[in-house]
Image 1 (cartoon, rainbow, N blue to C red):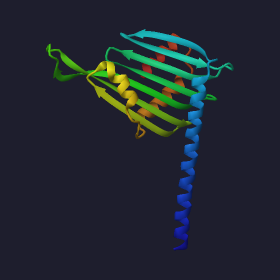
Image 2 (tube, rainbow, N blue to C red):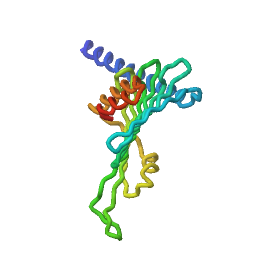
Image 3 (spheres, rainbow, N blue to C red):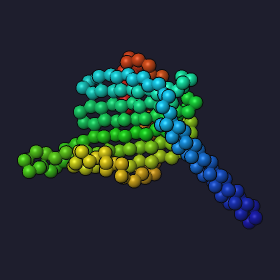
Image 4 (cartoon, one colour):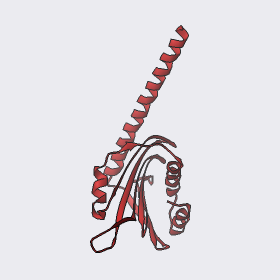
Length: 194
């Protein structure tokens, strides 16, 4: 019985220690994010690609030592867009902010008989330690008012989400994006899918 209680106590303390360590990592991620956003000395390079009626743009932010600090990768077409922002510290990805917008027709019609559209948005926040997702938050909204979707999304609550293959894919895309330096390489990245 004594060994059983010792085992339970050891597991409980280990769990608490892991939880505190994860929170410390997330606090560091928030600090690094703020530093990246506040750094006005970052040099910016932009690569754009028009393809199949859509546009893809990669904007790289590099510090004075040549280290990639942030990358904005945007892809859009007639029915939606995806905007990824990747943050790096010492070459390692630590945070991803993904915003997806799309629209579809609803079954309703307006007073003139035109089909009403529904605009949707999904925002994903990934807090990472190397290739491990420490915290994954998502929020999504849908509305018939296309002009209001951004504002509604900003006010929506983040909710913890479960990690799946698509999140792993986003991490892989973020690591690959660091090495894109030409339109041809951006085209190759586009074939992988954003």
